[in-house]
Amino acid sequence: MMNPNTINEHFDQKYGKAGTKSRTNFEQNAELYLIAELIRDKRKEAKMTQQDLADKLNVNRTYISKLERTVGDVRVSTLRRIVEVGLGGTLDIRVKL
Image 1 (cartoon, rainbow, N blue to C red):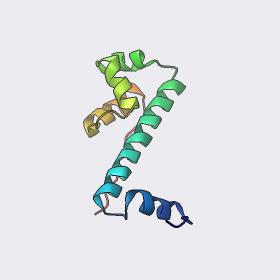
Image 2: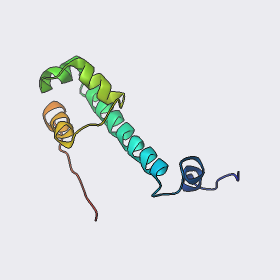
Image 3: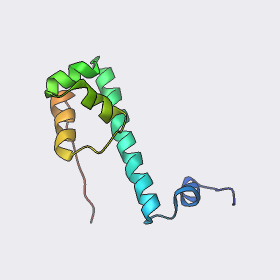
Image 4: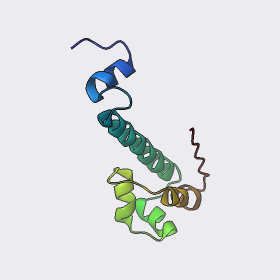
C-alpha cells in the first residue's frame, strides 16, 4: 500500500473511493461526530450540564449523553430543537442537488 499524499488519498485507501458504501458510511459517521462535538462544545460554553440542556428540551439526560457520544442518528427536528431552544442558536441546512 502506498503512502498517501493527501487526506483524500488516505480516505480512499482506508475507507474506499468516494461514492462507495464504506466511504459513504465513514462520511456520515464523521458528520455525526462533528455535530456531537459542536453540541458538546456549545453546551459547555453556555456553562450548561447535560442535565440543564435536557431540562430545557424536556428529554432525559441520557438522551443528551447519547447524542454527544454519537450513539445513533439525530433527527433534523431534534437537532433544530437542541440548537435553537437548548443552545439559543439557529440551524441552517443547505441541500445541493
